Amino acid sequence: MARAIKQLRAVNFTTWPYPGFPTDFQPQMMALISLAQGTGVVKETVFENRFMHVQEFNRLGTNIRAHLDEAVVAGVSSLKGASIMASDLQAGAGLILVALAAEGQSVIDRVYHIDRGYERIEERLASVGASIVRFNPVKKEVRQNE
Image 1 (tube, one colour):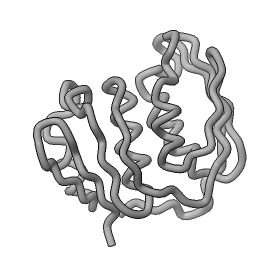
Image 2 (cartoon, helix red, strand yellow):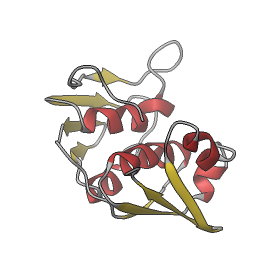
Image 3 (cartoon, helix red, strand yellow):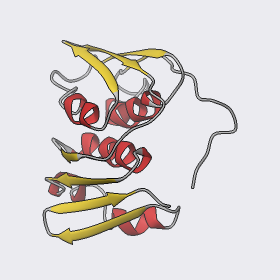
Image 4 (cartoon, helix red, strand yellow):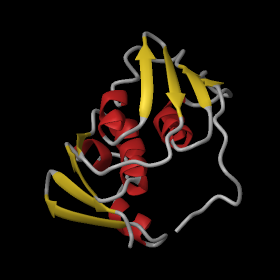
């Protein structure tokens, strides 16, 4: 299990084409900020509609408000498992991170998006302590390690 030595603090960042901060890592970074102390602002400059995952993150208890190309992420102290849906590959990776940080069980639908870019992700994350069970071809169950 990964743990921070100190309380994480929220940051602001803007996505840019190479060599800037990659838009493909935006959902994963947003997942991290969701559990950090404080509030961060994420500005997306590469793709329109890149915040489609925000509603799914919020189902798990994050506090994110998105409008146009900007999202305000207020850190929360805990998350709860929920049924969620991946809208694309990068959003799916972020959803897995948020689901693993949540208490209880989460079910992620439309994992074919995730499978397009992450071969055997459940096995790879198990090597660092994650408990992910693929229970049919289109869903993954994510449970927090106890």
